[in-house]
Image 1 (cartoon, helix red, strand yellow):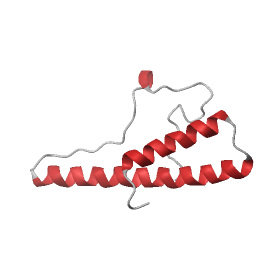
Image 2 (cartoon, rainbow, N blue to C red; image 1 turned 30 degrees about the vertical axis):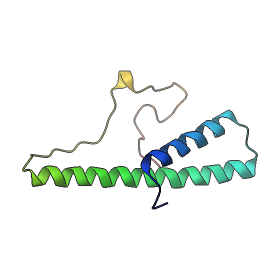
Image 3 (cartoon, one colour; image 1 turned 90 degrees about the vertical axis):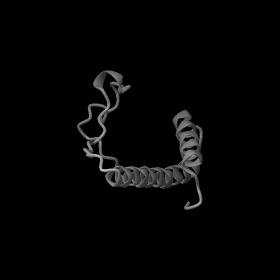
Image 4 (spheres, rainbow, N blue to C red; image 1 turned 135 degrees about the vertical axis):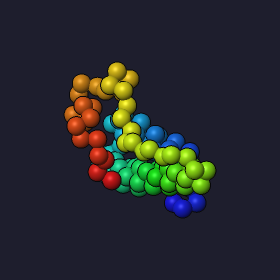
Length: 96
């Protein structure tokens, strides 16, 4: 997956999520899609972390005062659904 671009991986992951939400695939295909989705999610997270570190280094080189904070979306704009137990923000850590 090293040669994959972020945008392509994100588009593929979105397609997998859409396909699985529709509920069409058989069990074997669903498991394969889930496995691929987990790999893509891990790749995307590592790419975002790499980009964040690069930005921090660039700002440090410029002498900028850096203050990093974990991302927390506004409660009114987070798109939380009532049926999502993690929507409250109590358990925002992903399992991967």
